[in-house]
Amino acid sequence: MKINDVWQRALKTFVQAFLGVLIPQIVLILSNIYEYDWNNWLTWALPIITGALAAGISAAWNGIINASEVKKNGKDS
Image 1 (cartoon, one colour):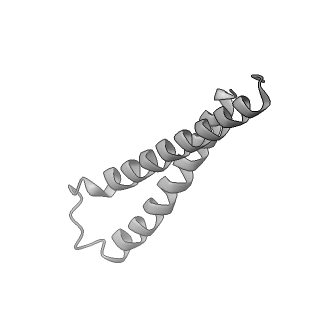
Image 2: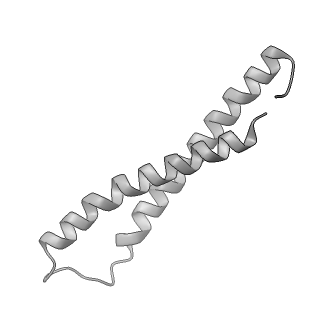
């Protein structure tokens, strides 16, 4: 199984999901900069949690796909 490929795909998915959640949050923060509570832990936790979940799903999905290809082909490449 190509485990390195699975990790690379999971990392890319994490970055995409993290930025996809973080960028809109930053825009909302900047639009209310004077009223924003900077102690709000969700500012950074929500993008990290979302990215981690997406990366986990990506790793599991790609691991299953790679494992089924290895089983189908009968060899590990």
